[in-house]
Image 1: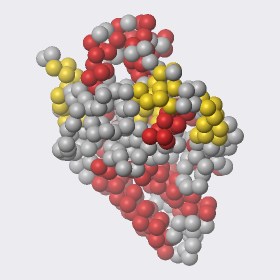
Image 2 (image 1 turned 90 degrees about the vertical axis):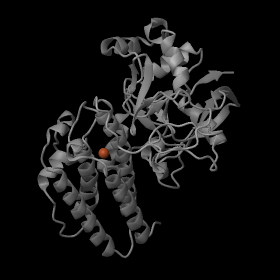
Image 3 (image 1 turned 120 degrees about the vertical axis):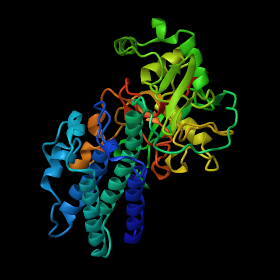
Image 4 (image 1 turned 30 degrees about the horizontal axis):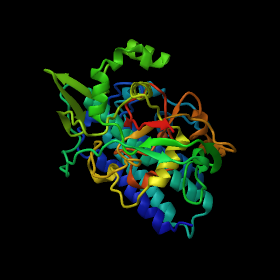
Length: 415
Ligand SMILES: [Fe+2]
């Protein structure tokens, strides 16, 4: 059972981080929605606030006065349980409420939450879970904010910066090796003893043959070899849908790569820089990851293989590259397996319910279960994931053509 003091501290920490990520934004940066996937920063700040208002304050705080009922239409994302909402593609059309008004909305809800917590002697289990979900939800939006502002800035020819580049010890990437993993009956999934999302449960047994998996992520340099060898022009390497996606959209390189006067550059949140060959490649669609694996004569791991290998190789000593370290890009680190952090790793597993999965009741049942169609599972978190938000059992999911999230590649092979 979490104490009220713990919830307050955690609440403040998460809510402050969302605002501090926006510290260097200009007003104009809060508004654009260049593609449907990218929500305006202003919308993230308001939507995460709406979540606390409807899931906690309206339900549990006596005589709670809704800040502005119209905000419920503007800042509901996909919850049918909470009624009509603005269509996703139109989030960027909203010049009002202003950025200041959105910050006032946050302040109002924060004060009401604190007043509510101060009036409680203890927090029962259901409410505690709602706070944990509300805070984890906001952390997911912190990560989405990073993807979105990277798209807003990275597709702007001025290549604005969100942060200054952090200097860290650059080391050569360790040699790629395939680790042998003995198969058999394996257990994956979360036992639910500490917070997790419903899609990670139940923990269950499954069978896997012996396999081999790479000791690190694929680098920019390795991906460049694929590109320069004509990988994007060889239909034999591509899934049919991937070949069609590539041709229709004329894709021939990762999302933020640019070739300028015969030199390769990459946009990162601290600006355009020469492509660093040893860094893990990122912003790759499933189709590209799959074609690369085929070109290498390997394959992507299944989510079970990934989870078993990551569990066996996890070290709490390893300096994982997650949001809170200030790097804001994939990076090369000494002796790092990169199972956690750097880039979400595409698996070859479809995002489906685990055997025995039961979705949560009520509006929370809309959180994960209804998206279990036409998406692939990604594992491990990225440099945009808050450090206290990731775990080995975490199941992220995106459609095969998406590459505005921080996605990367790890290879596997049969024994
Ligand atoms: Fe959300």
